[in-house]
Image (spheres, rainbow, N blue to C red):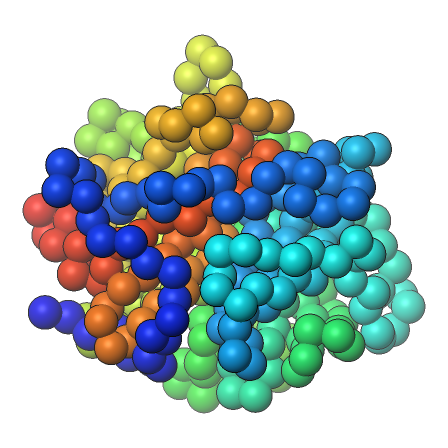
Length: 328
Ligand code: BMA
């Protein structure tokens, strides 16, 4: 039995693994939990992030509008399943040179000490990683962009490592990037980022073809007694375009650029109608995970076909055992 290092979350969404399930991750039976019109002007709501907040949950949601613009919106929920998402996008306080909006998408939310940090793909002469914090999900303070363009999928670690803030990200290009590896960076103050180290990349062989085109970090890494559990997305290019699945890796707790284990098999991929049919077919894209340190339970929130939002369940032991059973 392995342990999640963190807080208990007794009321988190959960369903037991079905007896006939052979995979390490299983879907919530009422998926999708958020439909494409879950908000006043939305075309689609997906690739979104949730955290425990007060006596329930808060989240930052990617809602693409019916004019097909991309922005991020606050939502609240009592149970992590039924969400009320605000109709107005987040307004950021800060230097207007930085807060000026081009586009915003694919948010992550990470609690570090007493603040909730939001990272997202921020349009700034091309995509890069935007950063802001809030205490209350009402007022948001935007900080400097963390990296030069072009970058996507910036994901903070939930505590400082060796006294520094830490992030994994995926350098990219301006388009539908046909490459992508995961890198580690650290910062003493959340403004100046350096020590950019390669973590892991695509597997360009049939040893693990589902992650042959690009990979990128998903939810905030989960601290366990064996290392950081990193759930990520991996992409293959097929004759019908890109297919996005989820994988899992284990990173060293003190030196997270060192990969201790990685699964050759994907842990979840597009199979259901809502994952295979939508604005962008065949996409399962994880952006958040709730965890309960007491039971080892994990609930993964993921975008489905760039249209709706789903939840899937697993445990720390399921993921670690799967990596042991199907190592790369
Ligand atoms: C990526 C991002 C994601 C999206 C995915 C599939 O490049 O734009 O937001 O889910 O493509 O379209």
